[in-house]
Structures are given as C-alpha cells and as structure tokens.
Length: 218
Image 1 (cartoon, rainbow, N blue to C red):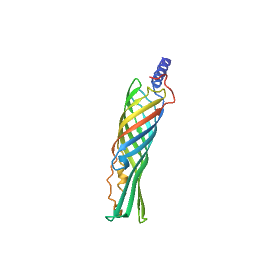
Image 2: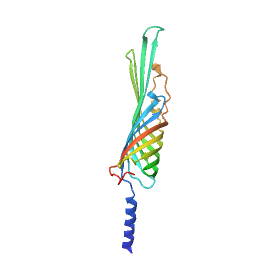
Image 3: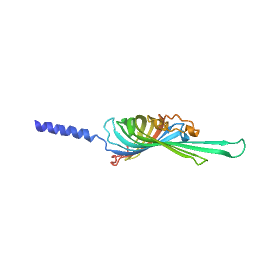
Image 4: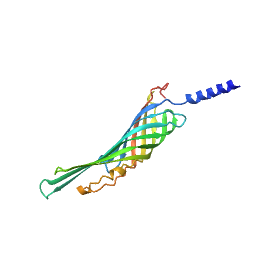
C-alpha cells in the first residue's frame, strides 16, 4: 500500500512540474509621458527573467534603470544687441530598481493577454547642474530609497518564433522621482522651483527569449 502511495505521489509531482514553463530572459524599453522633461518623456530600460509559468501565472523578476532630464536656460538682454547674461540649469534623475511580479495571463493559440502588477524597490539620485556666463557653477545632489507599484496591461505574441516572444504594454508607473528632484533648490540663481511628480502612464515593448525551443511554431 505504501509503495502505491509513493508511486501516485511521484506521478502527480511529474504531472505538475511537467507543465511548468522553462525560464526565459527578456529586455524591455519603456517611455513615460511627463511634460517636465525634455521631449515630454523619461525612460526606463529593464533586464529580467520570467522564472516559470503554470496555468495562468508566470512570476518574473527584473532590474530597471530610469533616466529623465530637464534642461532650462535664461537670458538677460537689452532691447537690442546680444544677451548680457546667460544661465543654464540641467536637472536629471536616474536610478536602479528591482521588481517582482506574479504576472497573470490568459493564453490562446500563442497569444497572451497579460496583467502585470509589480512591486519595485531601489534607490534614485537627482542631480542639478547650474552654469552661467559669469563662470558660476553649482551642483546639487539628492538620493532617496524608493518603494512603489506599477501596473501593466498588454499582449505577448509567441506564434512568430520557436524561441522569441514579443510584448507590448500600457503601463501605469508609481515611481515618484519628484521626492528627490523637488529637493534641488536653485531659487537663489533665479530658477523657480519645479514641482515634479513622475507618477504617470507610458508604453513598453519587450523581447523575451526562451533557450528551450517549442516543439513547433503555434
């Protein structure tokens, strides 16, 4: 009786783990809308792994790099003639954050509809550089730890390749880099303080690669 129980347990374990998907690696580029930054956007680059997949869940883990830049300039001049004074201010933020998600999906014929609630934690740095025509140069830096959620809704296609998957996403990003950027104060240099809030929406594109090819293109 005991041997029958052990055999049944091994069979169930095989059936369960046999349905687990193999890990895949992915690279992703996201762009977020924010009018405070150059070209009204800031950027995110991500490298990560879908650890496995089973039925409707595919947990993933990744590391992301953010970057956003806001350039400003100011000129004083007489009514005619060249400027008598010029000043420039570049404010930017960057940072590395880790993310983990229990990605949920519905798949049919090589197409997945996915929902990705993801928890992030890491550190960002905000930096301001001031320079004027009188050769006055100032640099201010702030650093903060960040904890936040993002949410993505998208489509992933695997029917074009035995190994590659392509994903397209609409994303709400809960990162507020303004907590660091708003600490940069250049009022004394005649630049009014900006009120940054980088919680916003964006678009993402992802390419994933699974080293174990599927048996056939679906």
